[in-house]
Length: 187
Image (cartoon, rainbow, N blue to C red; front, side, top):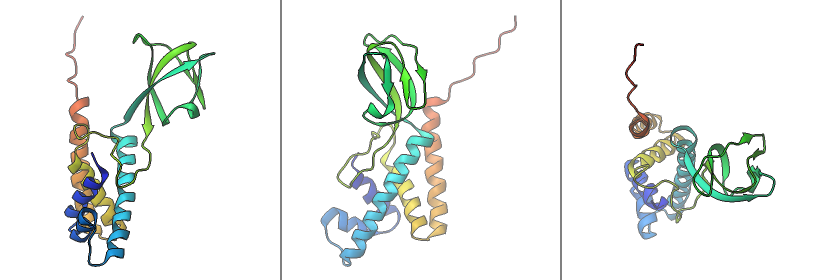
C-alpha cells in the first residue's frame, strides 16, 4: 500500500483537493502551501502507523540469527524490537529463552526470532508496513485525516474522524482476536 495513495485519500476525506492535485499531478494554485500541508500529512501518517503498530495491531517481523553463545542483542536486529513473540529453531520447533534489558538468551546456533517492532519513518514514495488485507487504506486515511484535523485546529472534524477511525480499528482488530469462550465443564 503506497503512502502517497493513503495521503491522497486522507486529503480527499479532509476536503483538501489542493493536496490531492499536488500529490497526483504536481500542480496546485499555492504550491508552497500544498507542499507544506502534504508534508504535515506525511508526518500524520507516520504517527498513525506507529499508533496502530504499538496499540492495536503489532507488526510482526522475523529474522534468522546465528548465535555463538545463545545471546541475541536487541540492537543487532534489523528492526527496533518492542516484544518477542517466539523463537524457533530452523525446523520450526519452539525454543525457550530468557529476556534481559538489552538482549535475550537462548540456545546457541541458528534460530528464527519472531518479534513485534516499531515501524520506521517513511516518505511519500514508500509503502506502508501493513498490507491492504491487514489494515485497509480507508482506515489509515481516516487516521491521517483525524491527525491532520487536530494539527490544523479543526477540532469538530477531528472528533468526527477520530470516532470513525477508532471504530474501524476496533472492528478490524476484533475480527481476528475474538474467540468464543469454551463451554464450562462440570466435573
